[in-house]
Image (cartoon, rainbow, N blue to C red; front, side):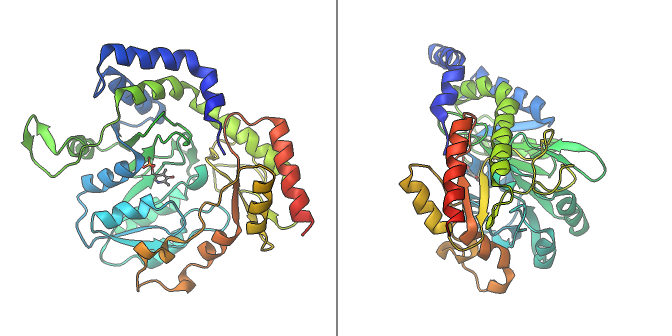
Length: 385
Ligand SMILES: *Cc1c(COP(=O)(O)O)cnc(C)c1O
């Protein structure tokens, strides 16, 4: 699904030198590399505060702790996402409220958010799934109307741009009150281990969060709040500093591969290619235009609409083509997150998507030969059915 070795070969010299420098310096924790990376990412995202931490799951949890959400507060998020999003809500004894997504973008449906709001609702967590921004115009408008926080889960969307209807463009993760991201190796900006970060433009929130990540300590050995220990280590920061200048190039390579995939699948029955949505893109619905920078294709995800998705997975496995099903089970059906408040009729889209979606290999090193082989194999199979 990814080619981390091929990507490493391109930047080996710099990564090796930077990592060795950290080892020679022995400044493994909170070294200068961490601070430098923080500043560079703040500049890239045009955001006031980046607070590095240990992983993307921690980042979400710490963002919620920073907002001082209280047990019983309701937090609305998407039914169709990675479990980390809902897990941290539950861990903090907040009440997760899962809602349906849109069939074209796979992202949380603003109308479903609106319907799920109660007097206990305190926050919305949109996930920029597969690398495409959720509908932030509508989500921010709802949040304003009901006085809710917006916490962007940007683990899959780093580098994506979101253009509002008013013409203003911002990076995903710099739109809501606070955002989280992950530097897990296979993410668009991945380190060589675990890593994550929290972003915000709010000075007070940033200050609270800087204490929370460090045992609730604002003055040495004075613990004002219950915190956690969550750090990005210096070696990972050195890797990320080597990769950040390439992030736009990496995301362009992903988009180029996505465009080639979509072109090959154009007009094929029973295959729906990823749709680029919203004001961000001037292109016609199904094509990814040349200038489009609103989708960073963390995943390239097809919908197979004739009931043969599982057979296609098997067929690709038999042909040594990696593929993935993200995600096979709606969160509202997961044992850990079942809740009497849900009605199956509330999740028609997620319930369908879990049976239709398949993600093809997507990374920065895909070449034409690989894409041709993959698309040919998929089309032959789906046409034969
Ligand atoms: C990867 C991911 C996370 C968690 O990140 P980790 O660094 O693995 O903890 C959270 N949310 C989403 C949507 C993700 O894809």
